[in-house]
Length: 188
Image (cartoon, one colour):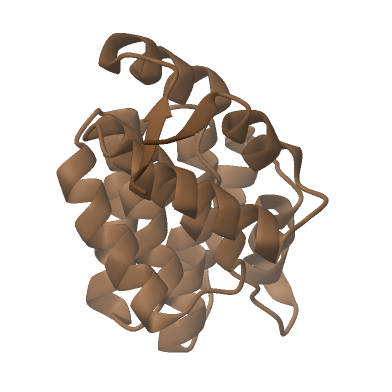
């Protein structure tokens, strides 16, 4: 018996759904006080105002940060740009974070989210897979983003399984639940 999985949306409709649903953004925790920690807290609590982005920039310009905290601050600033759909600026911040400390999975997952926003789904998959491989603080968001990218390349089966994985990792999260309602599993 063969199982067949189909998304209920065509590519154009899926692209619209991706934009409406938004990508999941993974911020990085920076501790130790100072501006970089304030930037981290702002990113982790969903802030995107330019004043918080400026806080991140000031931290990068004036504070002596470890390579992890410097990369994390670039990631957090990029996350704020993602929330404002500033894909290119966000991508630049994630690129710098990867140059500073290339083993932070969040940099890759978030750069993948920026690529989703630009409808560059294949590139997104490469980055998100790398981020998952390296490990991230919030893996459910990585699987959710990868599901969005799979939908973008019209791989409904992989998208379905990643939405399921995101929901398994974070059962109270509504976004994967909502996305899963669009799928139909049939046997033949």
